[in-house]
Length: 480
Image 1 (cartoon, one colour):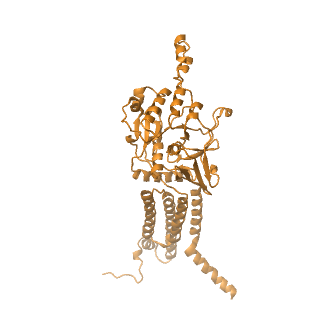
Image 2 (spheres, rainbow, N blue to C red):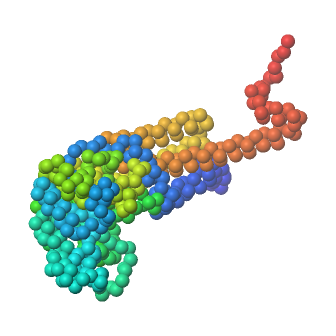
Image 3 (spheres, one colour):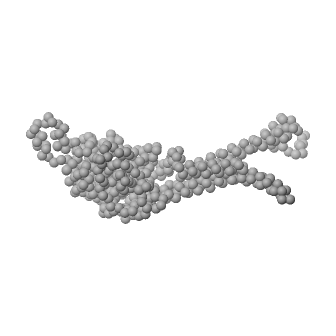
């Protein structure tokens, strides 16, 4: 009796497995797990689809511009035409700093590096022109050095010098200069393992660095497609923690107190700056929410120097000095689909911090995307073989449309970036595979029907019944 019971049990379990589980579902679930592992690895194709989705969101609803005390002092084509080719003498830069300060600028940050001595300084001109008359050379050597004039102008204002970095060491390691000390606090575990790392730094002249109120990095790494979607607020340079140019400008403008980096076990939570926590991604980067380029952000450097600028235009403003002249090529690809001057990207990040309008992509969004992918694909794998084609298409389209709608709503109303591309792609692939298996199964069943009935009726009649199943009726048919 036991042997008979076991003999009956195995066919029953086999039929149950074939109906409700099946090898197809087992293979599909294995493929689903592999797909989730691939998403965790985040290969280039997956990241490209996600970035394209976020770019579409960004372009469909750019940030609404709200006037804020942020101004770009721009070395534009008109300024170069008026004041001469770039680089200008450092005395001209000193004049700009003095006039901007006199007009009421709170702090001035340079998206420019003064790494070499000014070639237009009187001493440099004498050295480069040995044929000058001795009397003229002697008189020129009595003139003040251009870099010294600029340093004096910096000492009379709150100036943040821009610094940059390279991805590999250049030159002799022994010639590297030490970084100036920066006061900051750490809240939580060590953040350095999570931050973007830059091995070397390009600093300004020591005389300028010594009198600057602050120093900030303007490094940014584009995504694989060359688009600048994220900007680091904090990073490591020569294994030292440093703020970016924009947060350093805000820190100096609000009193110059120390900043803090808050971390947890997953990475960085944010940077405490100007008495507020600025949330960041786990690597210390933020997603700027951009508006199209606006002329109202700019003041031409030529207008400032010549006095054409309206008095009080810079009063109470944070000023970023940069270049938008075409020949200087300081333009970056943006998620809006158009290039933008790098200094304007810095200005918009500063606006985002001040208005708390940065795009948000918390660490938990990745978990939501993975869980959603597993849930949707599991529903398809389990129930697709039981549904007809119409029911499968309608139910799948409804689920995917709902998830895409929720993703866009979170962006539109709350600036949260939730990626619908990977769950949608994975579910679509699962639907195609399961539908293909169903189709192959139906073809196999039709062949079995042909084989079974072909022994009793003609092959032509079997083909007609297979193609037109409504003719398959018991009891024959009546005709007049």
